[in-house]
Length: 237
Image (cartoon, rainbow, N blue to C red):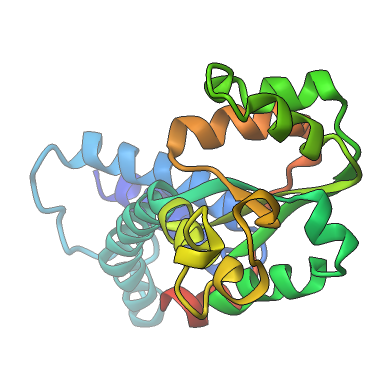
């Protein structure tokens, strides 16, 4: 039993030590070690007898690994799973009027200053047919044709942003559809005047975000990476 505990503890310790350089690998190893430990212990506290060699130095190190590494691995597993579950992705498009007015950097900076992470971006000139797919939920509205003509009138910037609550708060950053009703400090409230030229689009919910990301971008155009600022934004190491 002790030899199995030592082996599991050693695996967890190695996973934790390499986490800063290989987070995904540490996460996978931590999951495996924690699961194996749960099966091995079956609710029982393992013996505190020294692992392996019996000299005092090695005994201390072995016991510390067994006592600390497994709980730490389990905690790391829970924390990373919770963080992954909280992260969202949303689709944001800078419309042709925003591109023509030179507002790309201004809009990107507002999302970045908030703490959201840009994981995809490209410039697209949508066709009329593509615009009709994007606005398919408005096809029965009288302004549908005008919307599609406008979106396909020039280049647009397609982006995917990631972060906790990015869908809901992204909409707050954008402001109301009618710039006249948008609060000062929002993108539309500060930078747009009329509803027909409101410079930006943002997904309004998780399902819409998923559909719009799949429509505008290919899977290989999306990236996943760790941002060094995240520990300061979310308070995690």
